[in-house]
Length: 163
Image 1: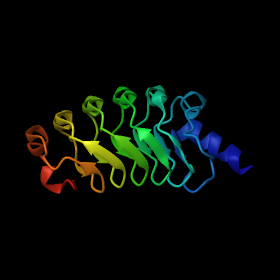
Image 2 (image 1 turned 90 degrees about the vertical axis):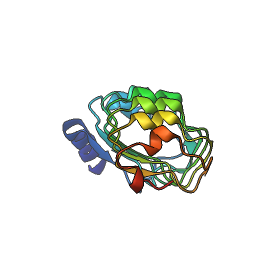
Image 3 (image 1 turned 30 degrees about the horizontal axis):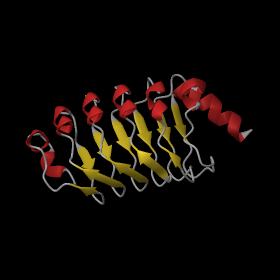
């Protein structure tokens, strides 16, 4: 059936795109163990609401995570820093709040970082300045402090960032 095709595809290609599916109101952390080789997880418009999971670190091979308009709420867990394989993190149009965790600075391969249209506040973490591969950054539509740390301003592609 259709769902078996997804499972087979996810196990062989490392890609799981569930855009627009109705997965209910919880982030599917079980995918980390069900699909240990998962590299790309796209959940855009697939979750009606749910807390950002503390167990993001279980996704040990994840390169791309996109969960746009999923009703994710609460803080972005500090465990995000343990997913060091990430090159793209997009959590736009959710209800995430609190500070952007400084652990984001551990994602040294991150190229795309989009947290726009959430409820983040406080300072942009200076640790973002450690991510020299960043090309596409959008943090607009939050309540972040206007001051941008010098380390972030010194990044090669800073002129293209939307803050």
